[in-house]
Length: 132
Image (cartoon, rainbow, N blue to C red; front, side):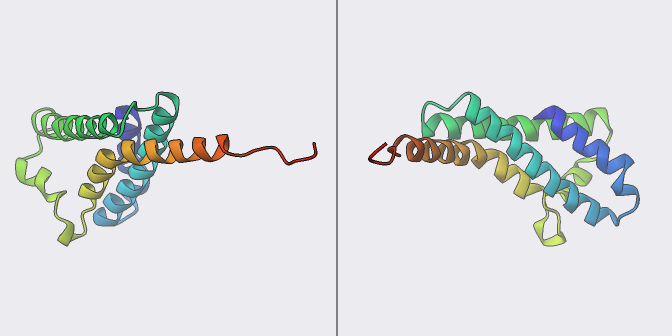
């Protein structure tokens, strides 16, 4: 998840972010990040299914906590951004979509657990046509 997020940020900073309004670049990057993290989390949940809904929710909570901790620790202490600059990303009323991505990180494990279980249930309940 970290690699996908870093690559998404690099693509924004050295690519399309140079040509777009900063808010639009942030919104587009958040949309890309949400989609890419959905692919990663979905693949993870498919390969290593969560044993229970509770386990999926705990994983989402842990991933959320690690994401927020990394964001604040890295971007404040390593990149030198002020706390105010970091908190701006949480203002939905200003068009900042970062909280949407964080919400997705928290709920995606449970969403994909349910999705994959429903698909597996549907596949196992199918019977071959009679007469074959």
